Length: 261
Image 1 (cartoon, helix red, strand yellow):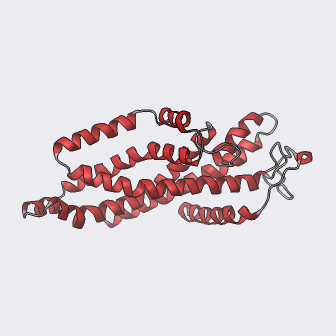
Image 2 (tube, rainbow, N blue to C red; image 1 turned 45 degrees about the vertical axis):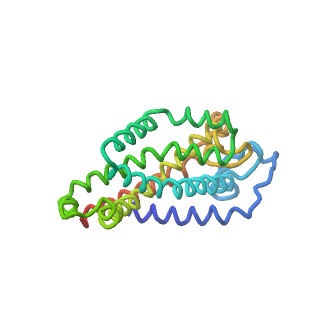
Image 3 (cartoon, one colour; image 1 turned 30 degrees about the vertical axis):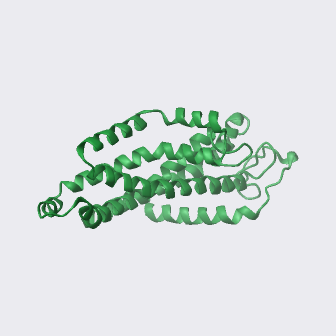
């Protein structure tokens, strides 16, 4: 039931974010900070400039999800490849690679993001680079652990004992299973990138000034928590439901994978 509702939400929300792109929210100062009206416009209320908060949230969601899609498309193949390469490398190279991963995982990614902003300024490229630093080390570590566990399987040990090269073992046995594992974790990776994007944009890191993203809307709404608390609620609620839905789908895929294997 929950998985079906999650799927319906993601489909409907994604369609709505695309449809709303052609709509102009406009500025109507005489309609600023109107409370939500469930029967008539505006359903989510308006912001301090009189703009429809539902339309702003949909447009912000489209940009945030677009950035998460780009980051996922970059991180996914790199993390799978690096996880395989490190796992089959010789012991010395493997230890060095693991030490580098541990450094980036333990080092606060926000500090690196702030350094990016100080050097190259805010922008979509800064946001993508920050998301890359946020998630790549953990994604590589996850695929590395999975690959190392596969290397201990009997059929892998048997293939190695029969003289199969590391390249053949990786190509025929490891790569398909690690790829399948990574695909199952893909919705979870995407949801974590959405949260990371919202956090970075909330802090003013990455997205250019004036651009509407989920994090930017949440950052703006914190200034009106007393006179217009609905702004933070109706901006954050769709983000929560979207992240929850992706995580539910990921857990369902993982459960089916475990049950079939």
